[in-house]
Image (cartoon, rainbow, N blue to C red; front, side, top):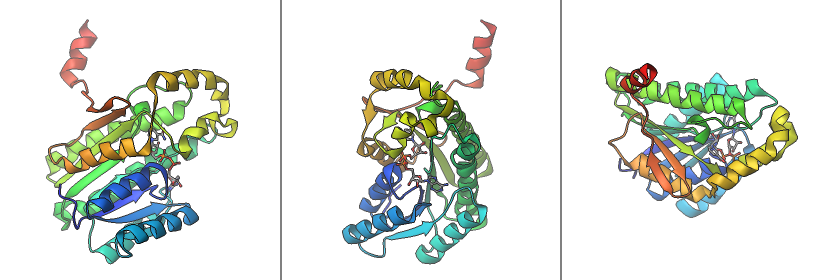
Amino acid sequence: MALNGKVAVVTGGAQGLGKGFAEVLLRHGAKVSLFDVVEDSGNATKTAFDKEFGPDRTLFCVCDVTSEKQFTDAFQKTVQSFGGIDIVCNNAGIINETDWEKTVAINLSGVIRGTYLAVEHLKKQNGGRGGVIINIASMAGLGPLPTCPVYTATKHGVVGFTRAMAMASEYGGYGVRLNMICPIFVRTGLLSSLDKEERAGDFYHLRDVNQKIMERFGTLEVSDVAKAFEKLVLDESKNGAALYVKTEGADYVKFPTQEDIEEKSKQ
Ligand SMILES: NC(=O)c1ccc[n+]([C@@H]2O[C@H](COP(=O)([O-])OP(=O)(O)OC[C@H]3O[C@@H](n4cnc5c(N)ncnc54)[C@H](O)[C@@H]3O)[C@@H](O)[C@H]2O)c1
């Protein structure tokens, strides 16, 4: 997909990976609407982007992805400012095992809400231009992380939901592709959550286990995942795909088909 002149929404775009994805889109000539709860970082990121890319290329909307109203209003504001939407990246996420309901509300319900709003705006049957939705999952969406079971559940949820929606879009002729990114550990603020008792909760005592898993898999920089995001957003052939991003590079996940599962269950 050529990105010049396209309009994108990135949730959790004030910092970390979301900021990195927004930068990729801006470099390719897109306009980007950043949705985030943290107003100071959101404004600071917009100011930095204004300096580098010009004042009319970025919008910052205070938006909590757990609020239907704020999310709906932010989409509306984006359309009014930029004249439509082509790309939506549902990226906002937290690790908080002590408040599992909040974690589910942001990481899973927020992605479902953001995807439904995106489909409503992008879908050709609604007069939309079609486009692409990229949902940010994790390695914890492909296998279990023992130090954060609720985070693991939300990310598995994101993978299952996105794959099913990709098929629904294809069968329904929405003109919208839905894909996922599943990175290993990335050096952002979120990563330090695992070392904080108030975030890790009952699993704080497993931080040595976590350390070993991190040593085994390694850690990435935001720029590594931004490169993978660029590859996925430009590739128009993918729908329902998950890009696994690791230290050796990024590869598409080969999910077992229903036939594979039935075959295995007989063994
Ligand atoms: N850092 C990692 O190791 C890693 C690995 C795999 C996947 N991920 C995923 O990448 C995504 C981005 O994480 P990150 O590492 O950049 O973390 P981060 O903490 O640096 O950034 C997350 C952003 O989301 C925002 N946010 C939090 N709650 C929100 C809400 N209710 N509404 C709107 N915005 C909200 C935060 O304010 C922040 O700007 C998350 O979904 C995370 O699960 C991160």
